[in-house]
Length: 285
View 1 (cartoon, helix red, strand yellow):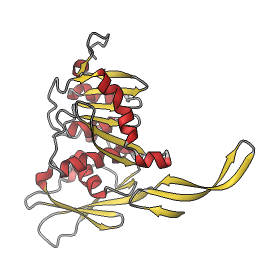
View 2 (cartoon, rainbow, N blue to C red):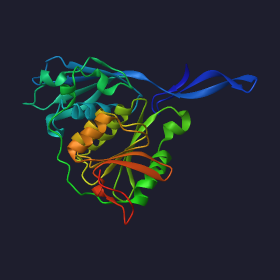
View 3 (cartoon, rainbow, N blue to C red):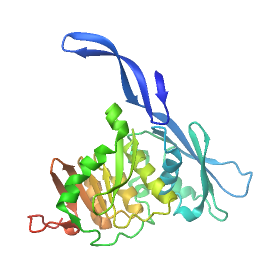
View 4 (cartoon, one colour):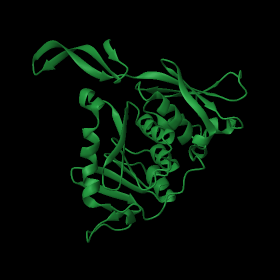
């Protein structure tokens, strides 16, 4: 592998390119995937940090990824428990808790290794997946015009610089109720992209995500709904399909869950009350 660029998470590799019956040497750009170890240090000083997870991710926004992971996994309740987050190596990030904050071993019910595509498969039981302490989602807000929802995929794609180069990376975008793109993060892992986005908002003191929309580039799993709910996002949309557990949890949380948001159409799987149908045939889900 040559030409690896960790700032953009893209690497250039030599390939053989076949078109019809013809082949020729060429170069291709691919998304980088490397391990990131997330460590947590407690007070007092001198206590060795504890390794809580190793996740396969695209390098970049590692501090946000670590902060988002710790928050959406319920390991920390919020920014007030964090003294700081810093890189301690090319593939390691250390979060230091504030004095008085402690790691709860019961919240570390996750295998030590998490693949970039796995997400909830690292959990030991469905009970451990249902993380408590999420922000309350305000009902009925925001109200979204149909044209706003229809415009989200193109706005997301326009910000996906990594996808434009590689065609092989996921994205999570944050929008306001008018469809304006507020933030976007990319990663080879769907849950990593969302953790990076939520972590950036957490570190910017912008949690909960009241009145905002999250759109993800692929399908929606249970864990993505869980992470968005913990951050207080009232609307979660996806270019792809949701799973049955994702729909169940969204309904449980009072979240509006949208699937197949593309090509001028979408499905509403839960709480259609936030969608301003303006006389259309959308019914409550």
